[in-house]
Amino acid sequence: MSRNLPQPKEDTPVTFGGLTERQSAFVVAYAESGGGTGAAATAAQAAGYAKTSRAAARVRGHELLRNPKVLEALRDELTRRLNAAATLGVAVLAELAADKNTPAATRLSAAKDLIDRGHGPIESRWKVDHTVRSIEDVISELDVADADDERVIDAEYSLTD
Image (cartoon, rainbow, N blue to C red; front, side):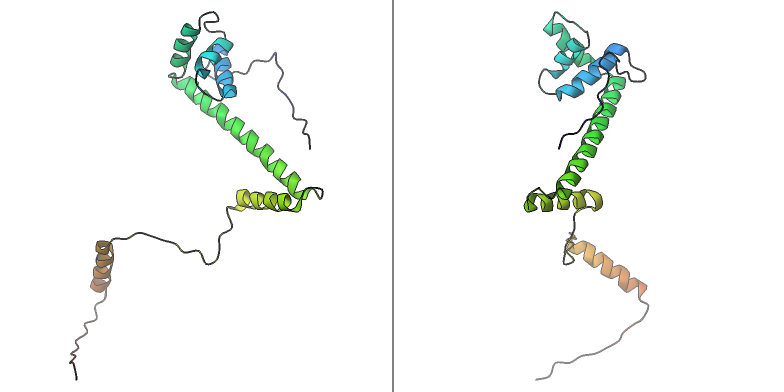
């Protein structure tokens, strides 16, 4: 179950509108790193900022992560990567569900996951919708209903032994 996905050319730098080539390289390197501890400094160094000084790279990475244009490009790049991964994930699930050599439990699980992602989770027809209302809300609703009802009911009752 191997996939041959097209790979970007290494010599073609990715650039984002409004960013310099170095800023764009920082965005790509930061997104690839996953954003953990020290990722900004590592991405800054990979993009060509402060190649010799880790401390200077940390400062530059911090500055870049405060730049609104860089943050917007980073959000766009992470969204693009997430969408690409989701597409691959759905393809893998479909392949697992269709493969007759895959164990039945795995095929069933893959099929359920595909249904959940395509149409939302299947809910029981006996699902109970719980809402929280205060007693004041209920009284207010009853008062409104009484005000709308123009009928006047006059009745008497008595207790009998």
